[in-house]
Length: 205
View 1 (cartoon, rainbow, N blue to C red):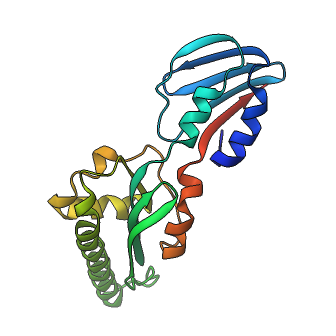
View 2: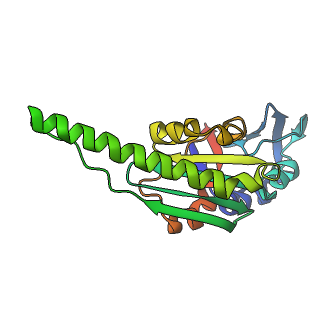
């Protein structure tokens, strides 16, 4: 299984329309049975079309891949956060921030305890800052976004969502895919659409 950007995938799929084979649409995926093997494609935002065809049919799949969505994004790691709103592939609102969080302490004793307490304080400061900005920036979009993309570090993102009740609406809209970005920055937000609109592709001989 791998993820393929929608533009590249569309170029691959378009020439297949109408060729001999079989197509099965259902459960949010399309299974295309070709002479050289089977291709199963799952668009990132679902696929409502259902049906079976005795040839390769790709139009419903291409339509699902090409549809733009309005998506709220929350990326958090210990050390920084990036959040915003994407309309299609365009970033229309955003906020990024950093907070220094010490690395792990390798020595024991009282110094290690002080280090741990200080690290916990820094982590808490980061989570509080990320949650406050998420509530401020994403809140006005609450009834307008269709999906939510979460990423960074799972634990940090989860703690951020749990920090404020104003953020309770985000989790139910979260996409299944978690975006494991190493360094939440503005550039990462701007480049996220490539991953966001990439479809899951399974190939079998």
